[in-house]
Image (tube, rainbow, N blue to C red; front, side):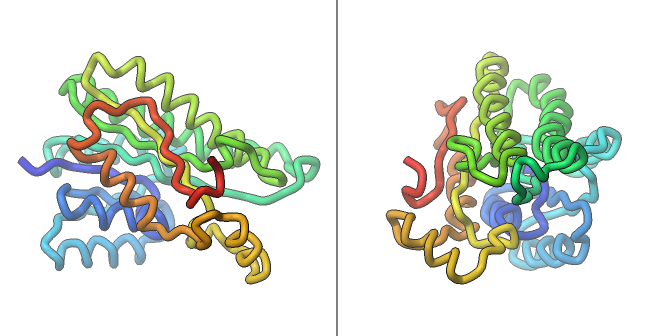
Length: 242
């Protein structure tokens, strides 16, 4: 039976690239919250090209919606083999300007959302004694970013979450790994041209990363080639952070 992957925040950007990559070998569930048209276009493209994709609207901070999404996945595909926790938001602000609402929104989406989806997925994976969980963190979770303290904190939390959970669920034949992208060409990379050129000069490989650069690593971690790898954080930044 074909394996199934659920990707959160998969309607565009890195999530879209991951969905396209995994759809070559997996049934995919494309989670979205607000971008219905983008999600539908992506699913239609996958289905027209021989894959099998479904879309599901869920706010990952809403536990009821998350539970419904996991139940939807199991009911349609009878299994859940891979979970990619990709959904997240970012914001640039001086720490002294970060309001309580700003802080809670970033932490709630990036960290609590990851917790919500993972907890519900694990109920199935532990029962099956099989599964792969791949969390999308950031290089800022590794080294921190000025003017992104709340975002860096959340992404660092995901790294701690990954390492701890990997140890806990390994006896159930479940692996947990993380990918830490650097500067990637998506809607989140909304810098002016001067800043982009400055960033390129600081990246040893001399270019901004593409969503496919991240998706290729996720594809490896989702495959059987990674069966003996768990608790790891793979930095995909062109050498920007080493």
